[in-house]
Image (tube, rainbow, N blue to C red):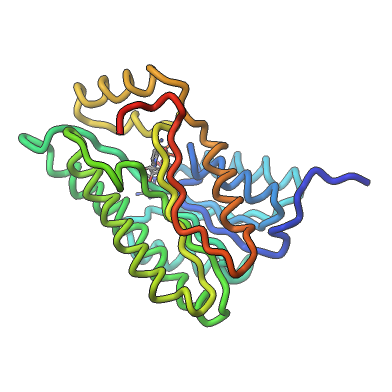
Length: 254
Ligand code: NDP
């Protein structure tokens, strides 16, 4: 009988944060199609329940994680639940994130705290709770969602750039620390992707301007990012794809 699945990730356990929407959700689907078991985390558990039903109907083992990545204990609990129900985490995808744009002058500094807590500390907590087991087992993939904004800065993106620069720096330090044990670290750096990311922007002018920018081009789709992530984690063990920078062809700004 033919099977549409590519069985390359059979037996692997993937934990995906931000799986209730956008890139995280599409990545969970792509990893499941490639054969992995899935632990899917986010705060909106109703959406996770729907995704679980969808993936289970296709034969994937799925655990839902009620997870706020800004809460270190919640990150530890999520990893413990995954290990108990599916086994140790082989693939960690840090896709939970926010893009709170706006000028630095007169910024709502609560946006700054939320950005660093979610994009930076959330990513770091999840790595902290999983990396020891990966190193001890001599295998694993850490996939961190950075952005073009982690490489090129422009006006109106101060805190977002700061958060993604932090992710890039942390990822390279981690790579050097763990690569000799066989654990791979991959930065995914997309340009504009059609997701719910703009919805969270609190500054009305910045939100309008970002929506107009996204609306002016054929954006990437979340599935394009999921496919890139599957490509990275299905490379032979000796190949580490450390950075994937991908923009829509139509994206002319940095
Ligand atoms: P979405 O807004 O569609 O998804 C964001 C996800 O993050 C949601 O699942 C949300 O779930 C989750 N999330 C947010 N805060 C928390 C939290 N405190 N704890 C747990 N989960 C949280 O956006 P994208 O899919 O586009 O974004 C995913 C990542 O990709 C982000 O890091 C973003 O910066 C990056 N990226 C996106 C680009 C784009 O153009 N879309 C371009 C470059 C990078 P819930 O609210 O249910 O908790």
